[in-house]
Length: 217
DNA sequence: TATGCGATATTCT
DNA sequence: GAATATCGCATAG
Image 1 (cartoon, rainbow, N blue to C red):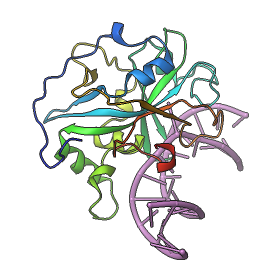
Image 2 (cartoon, rainbow, N blue to C red):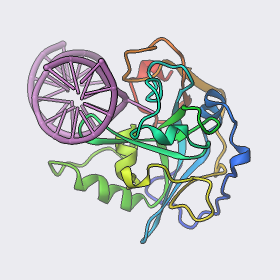
Image 3 (spheres, chains in turn blue, orange, yellow):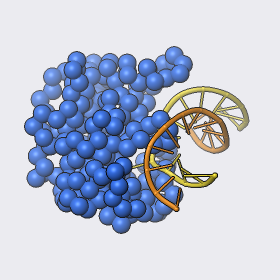
């Protein structure tokens, strides 16, 4: 685990090409564990290791694409590597990666990252949305999809962007530190339809993984 | 540490 | 009108 009191800066991270992304939703969800998510902001670069994902494959009734293509879920139907950013529960943005061929709707939800760069900026932005001035645990910084989007300044303005484009403000990178050991698998969090399917993937033992402990042994 | 609940707005029925 | 890929706060143990 990285020492969060000494944030690394100016990491060299190679952009992933679209051809490297598995053209299959479940394979992509597993593949993304240990990869890097990078957000370029005007001031600082924010980045983190992806430690938890969920697959919403074709035909999955819990997937936002299941009811058919619409203006709200259109990004899920674009080429893989496209960002799908969706607002939910009244106040949270969820960040996904479209995962199939154009015209087919499916995606991978990024649920948690382990902070690498830009930690103070993450803290600043997360604190702004807090009602009360409390100190919160470092682990809570980007644990859970809503918090992750808040910390990385991800909102609807990034919906539909190509994460594999040369100078995109949000992109996927090669691992700074590869995922260790066997990747954990469990049911997904917070859904009621197709709730039994084991399509959640996480790095075992990583404290930045979200959800109840029983799901992440 | 674990569980329960209200807030909040967009989308779909 | 109902449901929702959540979070933060409160309360109990």
